[in-house]
Length: 194
Image: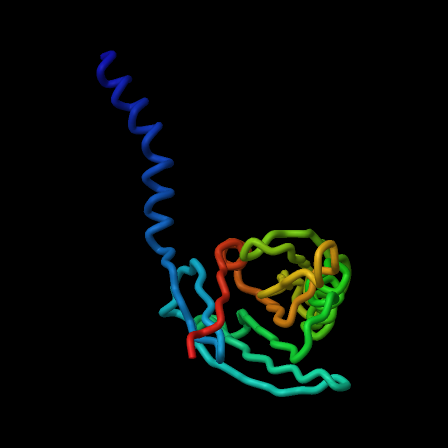
């Protein structure tokens, strides 16, 4: 009788780990082109997503802004969309690297996503850089919308100077929380080789 109890106890200890391993098998590392950038992240069911790219050129005063956006749309539910927008500015700016500027960028993105009501805001690390994660709810259906904003590159303006950046990424998603949070936690963005 004791060997059977020991066997059952061993199965109960191993079963959660085995189930977690099966869940992890559906997650894979993907690298996707995003204009002049490459975005790599952990994702599941990439085959169930339609991928598209867009590019825009804008100008704010004398600063030129080029934005490349990778869009993933669920093939099963076209209302589920994830966007990775990477903007390159012709001049470095401290508002692209500091928390206040990133909060504004994230909140502006939420407004465009028709989010209303309470928003939760947290400072996070993305690609080893300080960023912002804001979660809100859409007015129309109450579904969560995630927005993460973080600098893609940065440098200091001399010893003891301000932190400056010329490129910033904004991720917006209404995919399931697990998939969105995994992507944000694991994303790496690098400039594509020329």
